[in-house]
Length: 187
Image 1 (cartoon, one colour):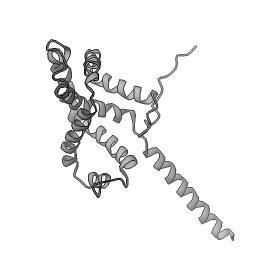
Image 2 (image 1 turned 90 degrees about the vertical axis):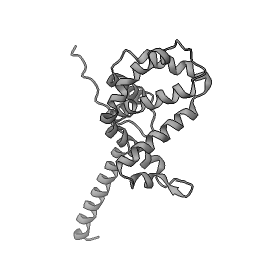
Image 3 (image 1 turned 135 degrees about the horizontal axis):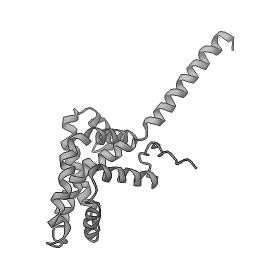
Image 4 (image 1 turned 120 degrees about the horizontal axis):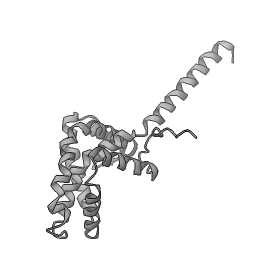
């Protein structure tokens, strides 16, 4: 290979390597987006649990007596949390749904081609249905207890806690991008 061809080949290889690295970086989600998704999803989770577990929860239990007060700040924060939740959904769909078809339709491509304002109600309905289907009767009490335990926390802390737990549990579909570590105290 002549020197005239080596320089462009190296430049092309460097560009391809940089693009591959960028693609790998984009394959993870920011902890803030995971937090936003948790905040966004909480009212949907609450509604699905309340409906699915209606005949399994006590009339004087937390969901019946304090549930609406717990979920109200999350409902109020859904609009603010939607952009982060939507970014997580797009990364998830790019990883999980790319090329996957349901009934002959590529779900990732379909959602990618829809206006964001159309995607949101679709996500709400689909997420609510998926959560309701996953709730087992034996889990109703645990769900109520988890909500009650989280009820004293501000919604941002609940979202941050969910993101942290997902990160340390190393759930990697999609993975959480490396979060900044808190500074260590000087010795």
